[in-house]
Image (tube, rainbow, N blue to C red; front, top):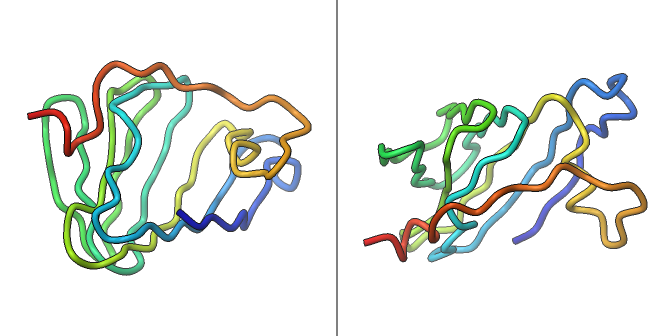
Length: 120
């Protein structure tokens, strides 16, 4: 996974953060999880498979998927092509997770299940 922070929460008065992420083909993604912030995934290239609670959906370029605060969600790229997407969250702070050496804490996630590719 390659991540580039585009907007730090310090630049938005702690309201929002944005990261551009590229993931390889066959990326299993994170385990099914939830956390106390909203996330929006805007697909730029390729396809992502999302699990939101018990529903699975595939999203291609131009698609926006919202994972509201505390919803159980996961994503993956099970296909043969990589994917690139924007990850936007509010309130801010989660971009620190992508720092090589985070200097400030970031919101954590609670794992509630396996990655999409391992759930069935």
